[in-house]
Length: 115
Length: 110
Image 1: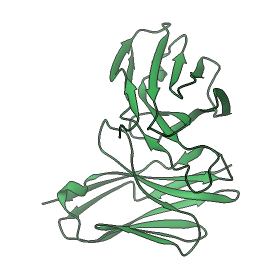
Image 2 (image 1 turned 60 degrees about the vertical axis):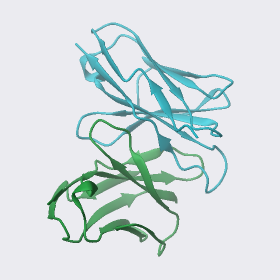
Image 3 (image 1 turned 90 degrees about the vertical axis):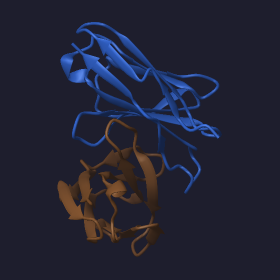
Image 4 (image 1 turned 135 degrees about the horizontal axis):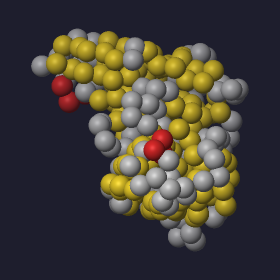
């Protein structure tokens, strides 16, 4: 049973560029959440997708956008990259709207470096 | 605003030296409290979910407990392989996002 997978593993971009990160949820999960984790800090919630719609959003600018596909996989897009966007981007999947079953399971992350 | 703090920030133990990590939270209606372990450069690995005060969960050398304001992760006779950052997160109300604390970096020396 495959867990949460993310691609790519590492990515280097320059300021002003755009980036797309990808996530495939754990088998049987229908909800995907994205987090940004700066070095030495806890993950910060970006947004959550369920049934191909953004269900909730954290305190991140509109430069951060996402998408969920019919197979529940998801993409995170970041436009006009800033140096401060350098971080580990984590994807977590869960079984949405099911009480006591919506524990979030995380993927290995994508390390984004903005130069 | 929902908040999670963790203490200590870092902890160094000798192998076999038991200790506890603290997670204090402020949340409007706790839905669940979650403990994760994170190794450097990797994604968090799920450990426990606690839903109500008084609840306890155990896994190998780890035991998590929950009160109305905080949670403790007790580590009994730790081994070097227990070295990692331990993250605490809360979920407020049904379907809400997770709010994470900054983590406790645990080092267990042989």
